[in-house]
Length: 277
Image 1 (cartoon, one colour):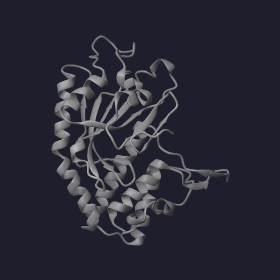
Image 2: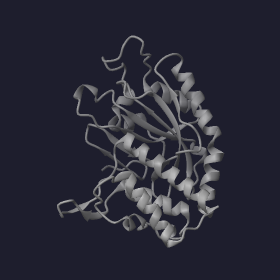
Image 3: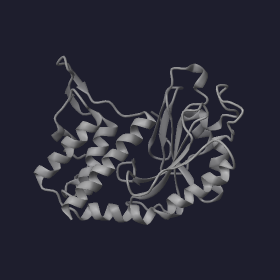
Image 4: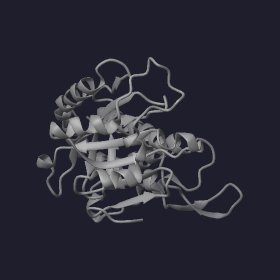
């Protein structure tokens, strides 16, 4: 673990993640997610595959005021794909970042080995816990395939996602205004457990409700959602394996699993808000 901009970086040379409170530089990014800088597509791609390095797309977004604050790269067992595998960049406008407030983000996912098109989606970064959410059902994801005018299409997609930022923030405010009774919080945690652990449960669902900060104890749907999400994503909860050994739950590091779980939790919270209004 190394510190950059007040948060941290995890990497072992084959995929990693960097979260920063200041815009991430290319040098920092290269250490964590080298596939962002790949200068050609993986040799498995056909001639119909239009290749533009992700760094070129990112530089175009930077010119529009979108700056990277989180980068990640998936791990792969195929050594030949380590410089081309799936990567994620979370961007926001530094001018809109205020300490103590949650920030709207644009999440960009891409690969150069054929496992992903350019994918854009909305997210929220929680400054209090340095944790990123992904919005599930407020605005549609946008996919830009590796053909045609990719750079302009991705930049246009970023503005389309940005246009939906008010809807996302309104949904957050609605969740903040919904108070949950203890049995309702337990039901939320139990449903969330099913999203990550389909079979054997290493710990009780109530442990997902153990907040990491005092200010999250108001019983609101928003804080319940965030407490559960952070505990599932970051792991570290004590429990027992199927054979009775003491364990700690694992952090979710894979890009696909992170996004899938985040979206499912957002949808769960949104549907509960509808039931409570």
